[in-house]
Length: 467
Image (cartoon, rainbow, N blue to C red; front, side, top):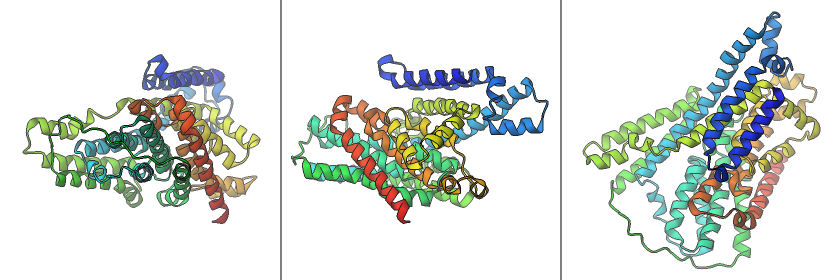
């Protein structure tokens, strides 16, 4: 059954990767995979737990020498699965709150305050403006939402397909780079932050410069080696332009929404409560404010702008995908597969930079969420006692909170997904919205992404040597 879990996970992953040809939503596959992994695990309990790879069970069995099948089932069914569900739920509720806040801002046309300021028709100037807005916006929102917002903006600024696709490619690079250095900017960094592997100030200080370099290098290459052209603006749309709210209200909701997102790290620092509690608090405050300001409006407008209406627009399949895939990875962490993998990487590779670079490249082929979840399951957060007792204290020191391994993992998993258009949520969103061809991206953007990825990695290595 131990081997069967690996085979099942690989088959499930292939089905997720082939979502579009199979025409089966990856959320459905992930939910089936997440459930069946635990079913196979519990069916093969005696053999799997006897491998001695689950540290918690080893401690329990040592304290209870007569523990049999009943105790094994109870241990996995009541302890292990609920433990991983608790970790997964904290990420799910955080994302649900963040996505709702962003959607509230979007429904109130709050982002229009930003996008209306862009007037240039110079191609090279526009790519710098768009890329930097995306880079910093992604750090505050998330790379998926930022990509959707910026692609929507791009449609209003550029009409020619080749120009639009090239800028969309840079949006993907900038969104993933911007999310990597912020504790609330990318799902993988959120996972590391919530899990306690990184803290707010350190992840910003250590990963900001490498992330910035990873987008600066592609921008400089295009600036110096691509011909400059005038941007052809699209014709004005004839769609209904009726305003549901005024400029003051749009600005107010934008400020309040962004403030709610930025408040989360402050809330965690002050209260030491899980970040999702701060996110839900911010959402609740924004909900009350919007209910008050829309009281006297017509029913149709009130329904469109209310949080109850906004919730119907949330991307629930994405939330369910995370739930399924994280629970599947949790089963492998509990069964011990990830312990075996970490041991192999330590013995055969043994270099935290190479290990993370491999994870980053893999994240362009498969989703970076389970890769990071796997890394979190493979390696424990090292304590001072673990470091002092280790055979190689210098190596183990890399795995303490804010250690080099975790920080570099945030960078690699966040930016490595840009290498292929299917390697990140931002890339998949842009591909769907603009119908960008996979081969076109491979020829035009992938090599820029690789150069930026390796340049940022080099800067992180140099930074680690000097500081």
